[in-house]
Image (cartoon, rainbow, N blue to C red; front, side):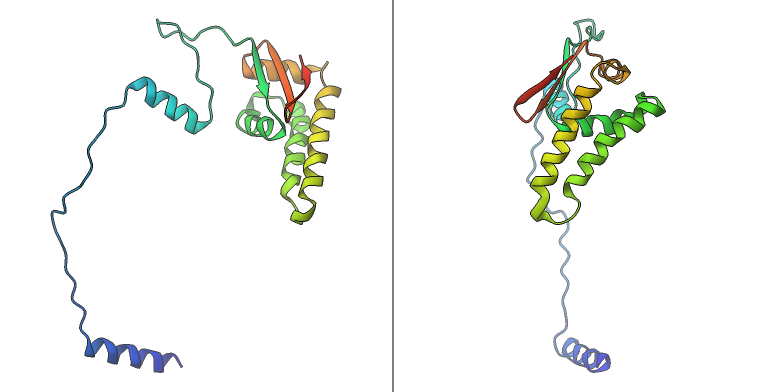
Length: 161
C-alpha cells in the first residue's frame, strides 16, 4: 500500500514541477513604540502575577504592607507553590495538604468537580481556622512580609489574623 502511494506521488510531482520563489528584503510593517519604564514594570509584574513592591523615591523598599490577602484556595496554593522553600519541613508537610486538596479538585470525572471544589474549599477554611493560633500563621506572615493575613473563601471573609 505504501509503495502505491509513493509511486503516485512521484508521478504527480514529475508531471507538475514545483517552483519555489524566495523573496528577499521583505519590508516589515513594524514601528517601535516607546513605553515608559514604569509602565513596562507594571506590565511585567502583572504578567508574572506579582504585587508591585512599594519603594520610596530613593529606591529603598518601603516598609512591609499592613496586610496580605488570600482570595481562596487557588490563590493560596499558587502563592505557596512559589514560596514553599521559606517554610520548615514540618510546616511544608502541613501546608502541603492544602495543595493536595486543590490538586484533587480536577482529579476524576468532571461531573463531580463542583462537589470536589466545595470539599477542597471546606478543607481550606477548616485548616486555617484550626491552625490560626500556631506557628503556621506567623511563618506565612514572615514569608509575605505582612503584619496581618486575611483569608477569603470566594467573597466570604472567614479569617483575619
